Length: 82
Image (cartoon, rainbow, N blue to C red):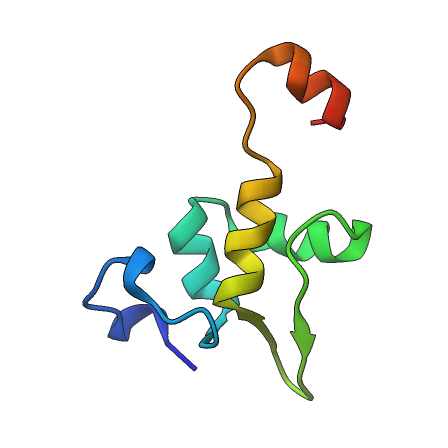
């Protein structure tokens, strides 16, 4: 699992099978940790794994989620409910 302060490479170079913590995801997608927690509660963020004391995200799942949010127009965003 990658820790935020240990990443010396671009997020795009992380292996899709690697797991990252909430702080790393927050830094990657430029969203506050509190918003990630809210998204987990609402079921609208990337899928995650709940460990006994923390949450981890698989890099490939995050990439898939980001891709699903990518649009070319506001019309397309509206159709996706974004």
